[in-house]
Length: 284
View 1 (cartoon, rainbow, N blue to C red):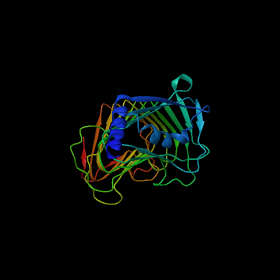
View 2: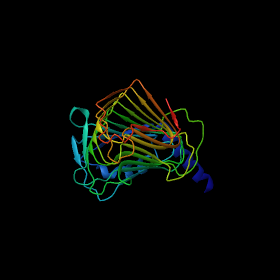
View 3: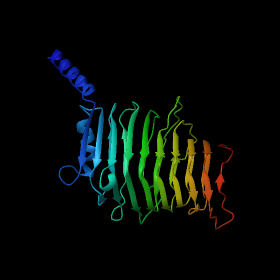
View 4: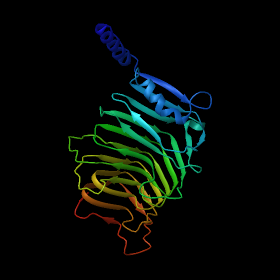
């Protein structure tokens, strides 16, 4: 019996390695967006790469809770807009429930979110605890890439990343990369927040934003740890809603790099509010 179990397990492992990827279409015909967690869990047994094509041109979220997505070990996931003109709109005007990602084990998983317009994430109780994407990161061996996406009309954060304790390893890649994205009319509690939960933490987490544009946004970044890189970005009409720093507020052990970027019409209503607060952290 033990031999049979071993052979069955070995067969499943070989089968997963040989059947690299599967394409699944999310539409009214079969699967729904709320089915993503179950689909990932089911197909991860036999596939290394799971590609979801969102066939909705526009999808209005009316979910009562966040969508928890658990990424299994050795599994890559792509969520790609595939509606009209190969794009999809995620409209949060009814319910503002975002995505929470978890990794059962960190094995270098790669997540891609591509060609999706996220709009109208306006929460009646906006706060530091309201966000579109949330990651509780205890390791840096993963990569999440947003490609050709847009985020428009928010009063809450696009991305919040919590690090609960020190995690210093040789991290040579971006953990998050926003590439060719547009951020428009995001005013309330900032756009990005690298949160250390109130503790002084050392972490090599890296977030990079490249070839992207910020239009009429406030409090772009708060960072308590790690590295943040803006490369080839355009900022227009940047201001502050929470009254700390209109562009970046840095605390503890963090490094900010700005390169090949341009700023226009910086709007600081209250002259007391600085553009950047670094508190002795590294600014390049």
